[in-house]
Length: 470
Ligand code: ARG
Image (cartoon, rainbow, N blue to C red; front, side):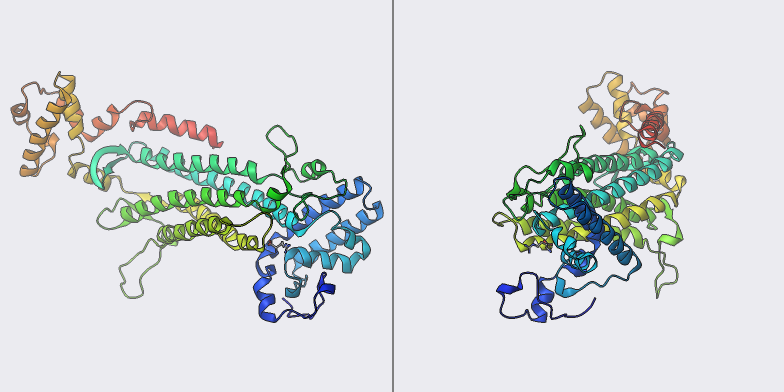
């Protein structure tokens, strides 16, 4: 970035003294809003094409603007473009270079436009593309989880409530719970995208413009259309230039993505600890300790859990940014970019890494099953068995509590108690009780929609695969 050109700004006739370097730095956004350059050029071209179609600029100017923008695009891509701090932001940098390249045609580009509707358009275009990228990554992550679930539909995991062993579940079923979460995340992002994909251009500074602009034409050119294919144009100029709801709701949806990743991370971390020993995570996602040679730490899930705080923080930042802003545009809104950009970067990298990492998880079924056996996970099954024999559920619950107490005293699983002992708790207990007391019997019994029976898990895997195109 070139340092202070003591340039006279576009509006400088009114100004009698230059900005200090500190104030320039404080007010400039070009350090970070550079990344909007593609959207800025795309938006400008759509605007210029419309100006020409409406007879507001000549065909010659339109040609000149296109060729100038092609040059600028190439310069930015190659790194030759000189970003100038004194030109404040991405919009003024590109416009100034355009004018340098093509003269008066460049100066006509801003007809009927303000940076206020320009920046709102740019951010929306940019975010729309990023949402599409995140949706693709969410699909990848879901596919990886579904693949792992399919391979482990029959693996028995102790299901927990209160982190106490509760009932046996299929490991595949457990993984598919996360697929449900990420599927809802994709739904939410798809819904947010509709409100992102609306056109502010034509609102000018705040009140609209006296030029006969064709806003719907610009919307169509930019692909800002609703589900029915009709142009999606912001309907109130004051709202259009000042609304950042779309950024806030995107960040809210992104926060939920991270919350889901964080919950999964917490489980991976627990499962990988020696006390659980349920899984192993491939070495390339872990690090060692500088002092303890035996350590292999699950850094990636830990960092993802940590980065969740950062994204949720951005949501708080953005929502607070909007609070108390009077209509219409205020410079406060320039502060929307860094949190939004960092949210996108964080979620993108996290999803990309997780999609890979999930595929590299090694499952240890014996350890999971051992843990399930330790926790009297089939106690509910014994109660259900007694209910089927005619006992009221509350009485059955009490009978089983006694049985569990004895099993604990003897240090064995319920299924290891002899029939005579079990019959001591209730005479209706018969030989068939052992089918329900085994982990697998318990699992297979929960064979209803949404249940953990491997048959159900396989049906869900098939549904997800069809939905995800896997
Ligand atoms: N860099 C500004 C932003 O990010 C662009 C809009 C500036 N508009 C203005 N009237 N100063 O919001």
